[in-house]
Image (cartoon, rainbow, N blue to C red):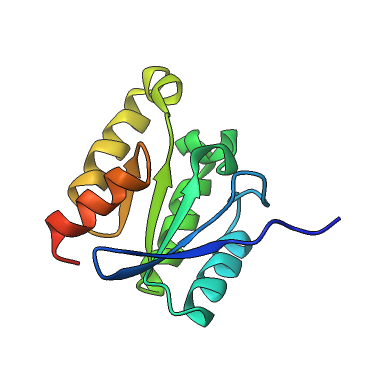
Length: 127
């Protein structure tokens, strides 16, 4: 079975690697490095990952999965956008809700509804 192929798109003058929903989970430092490597090889400054690919442990901050993954993206100066509805996850965790709010204030990690919201943020940030 062939793995789904990520798609490169240009948003607000920025190259973004969009990952399909049915690919491997973003659940470890190695998974982050694989995406960062793919993005770098294809000239993408940002990676957009569907929220469902993050897995449950990503949204449980005590597991440190999100922190480890995000740190890799920061180290390699690659933006990460988690796209999709994470209302259920943020409703269940005050810590996650705070993490999402703080991340969305920054320039490295954003939790957004969809590609249109990502494009708007990229325009707004002047990235």
